[in-house]
Image (cartoon, rainbow, N blue to C red):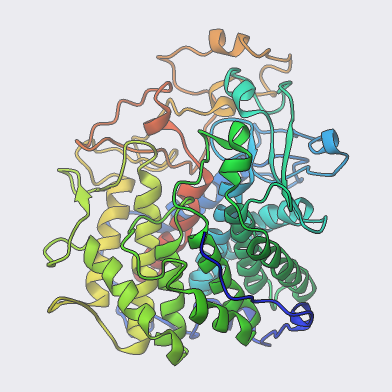
Length: 510
């Protein structure tokens, strides 16, 4: 296994720089980042409505004691003794998808992407900004609990196998709330580095709105990244019986180390992270041609993020990340010499059968974000002589989001509650079973399977949930049993928040 130059010194935890910028000025970079664009006269979709619903969705995924202003009211308190198995407080956080397990790896990525959405586009969110911040804080409050003990991170609550064998509401769950951790003896570099990225990114979100909380997040991010870098090893090796096949890491942990360092560089302005990226970037896969961005592989996200330091902040040592980012763009855009991406006949980016929409939303976010960087720098992407303008990137992202919202062969939205036709039988326990309001009696583990009628719509609307989406031929059966196509997930929605904000603003809806 490759060794990396050492990053940390005894003084590293003392070095934090916080820029005194007002929240509205900080979000989105320049105060009026898109002021030179005229609003198009007509939009085929209500992006503002979709944005609001994409954020509300996270309230339906909450675990723990729900607040008084909970907007998805059919959900109630759950998991109130989480962590008790190891005498720690792990109450809170998010259920990742349609089950009742709290997986730390995708939860951290969700939090990172929600934060990045706010960092880039929060200044345009208007009334939704506070809702987005609350969604982030619900994640970071939990991640602070999970990282409270030095050199230990609690990365999962729940026995996934036993949980998946039941069809229970989270309020009723009685399967073991097993607590899984990584430490010096059982390392988990990828989940530790992603957790550091989440804490660091969120510290930027709260820098001026809640400076004390921001400092807590940044300090914890530094410690967690130090642990990730010092104690290297794949969490899906040491914890395989617990995390596989659900969230096995297939891309290795190098991408998370680069991603985590990139976020700490942004959050702290400490030059040691720039030095770390310069020294280790190639070893960590900065120029690899893996062009899939999601909870497993962060290389593309790191390239786009680091390109901003060069394009917008003129950090010359990171100039290679502009070409690395361009290579990703060139792999996506049809008609360029280096296109490798696959599309459905209806035009949807297609990566895989299982939860493909996560790659549609993450890619769309990266495109509008990179377009923003290029516009600020007055640059374009170069694909072997083919010039890709920021306008082209935005147009491509819009087409993908419009497909998600209903411009597709099925003429249906893949966001629950948006548009006249959307999935009615999503793979989600809480949504598909009678709520506590209508059925206060406990529904036992196996009883849930008998209550749910495969043909009936879910009784509880999980507003804003985006499902896995259609297959490679644009077909979507709306079958609750088909988790690959019908299950929503937090990491599908998180990058969508940023993309929808940009589109809503562009069409004068915000």
